[in-house]
Length: 197
Ligand code: B12
Image 1 (cartoon, protein in one colour):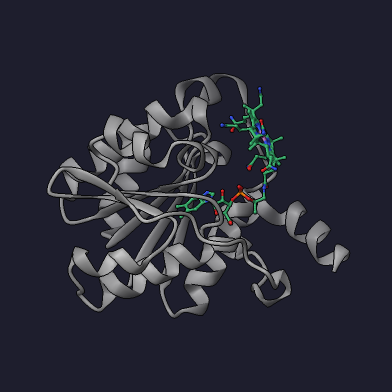
Image 2 (tube, helix red, strand yellow):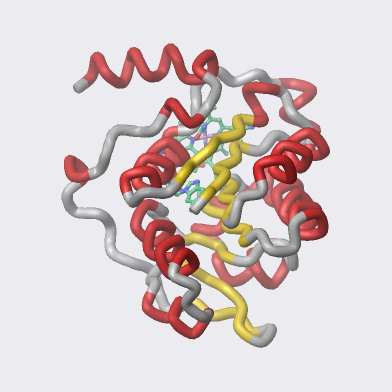
């Protein structure tokens, strides 16, 4: 299954920041999805200074089945809008949002942003892989009940079956998939990371 992971860039970031640090959380989620056999493509809108229309155009070209966007609280309105626009252009795409904001407010994220299909609470590696497997297998939403750590809608009501426990064995995780993003965005981070191992 093709999945696009996005580090978003709102107007404020466009005006004031140009990060070259990479996004570790997306790197780990991407690595686990790849290990599970999915095709993962990253868009680092902060690094590439991409506005919403640029990101939407790339996603439309890529035609993924799932899009995963990371979001801190100050980014959530931009991310909500981005997801709405993505669903307008590609109605079949599943929009999944993880990171600090949906971790703090999983249900409310869905109540406030109609374009977001799934909010991931906490560590996203296992929740996202389990969800992707169910979608790939064409399972109905009723089967999502077994996935801890995700909030989603069924008949306009938000479902959340509780958080999952923290990953015990961090050494079992693959190394972050820096390669899903443009090399320049992660080059320095990758070198530092490899030196620490
Ligand atoms: C490193 C860091 C930075 C770095 C890099 C940020 C980055 N790219 O992640 C820099 C220095 C750039 C930074 C900047 C800022 N940061 Co900062 N940062 C952190 C810090 C210390 C660690 C983040 C990290 O790498 N964690 C490890 C990785 C593996 O975890 P993760 O990113 O959370 O990802 C996991 C889950 O969240 C989830 N997940 C994350 N994204 C996604 C996406 C999908 C689709 C899915 C399914 C799951 C998922 O799965 C991942 C793997 O388990 C956290 C504190 C913390 N302990 O988390 C604060 C934190 C994220 N930062 C915070 C803030 C406020 C900021 C700034 C706004 C500060 C400021 N005033 O300028 C800026 C914003 C910059 C910007 N425009 O984006 C807050 C966010 C709070 C909130 N509710 O939004 C935090 C939580 C600190 C705090 N407690 O206040 N930050």
